Length: 170
Image (cartoon, rainbow, N blue to C red; front, top):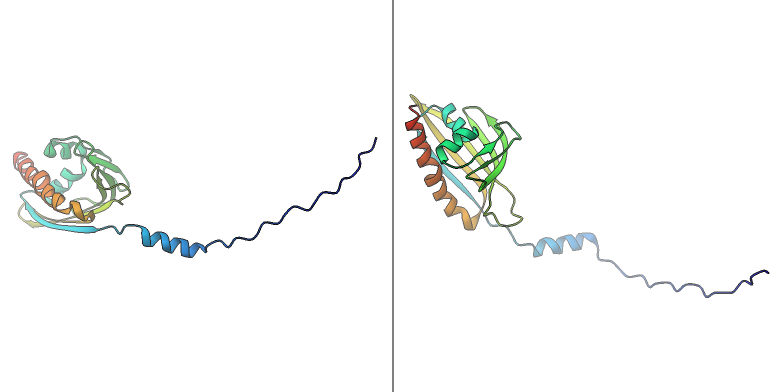
């Protein structure tokens, strides 16, 4: 037995809906995104030690842990990840010039969600006999946290580093 062909109505065409252009959608999204308020911290300190000793205190995890009296981890090579202050600070070494320069991507656990890493640059210059001038430029810091980090560098880095270098007999 053969089946009879049944005529079916043609499917209805959907009305074309104009889609917003992607550029307009992107522009609208950018306009509604909150603007990041950033700050830069610049500090200079002089330490009674050779530049290489100051450099190693920052990038060698065991020396870093010794002067901060907190856990530090890391691989002191360009591209190597690191942590400090029991995981409160984390980042990656971008540029390492032994005894002269340290550039890191750097953040704390207090950075706002979605905030990009800040950039930490430490320049080390011999000042005189066994002294080092350190210049810190810490950019991309969340503005509302900048004052806290300014104090933090002094209280949690410069003061204990001076004690560590003095006690190490350099």
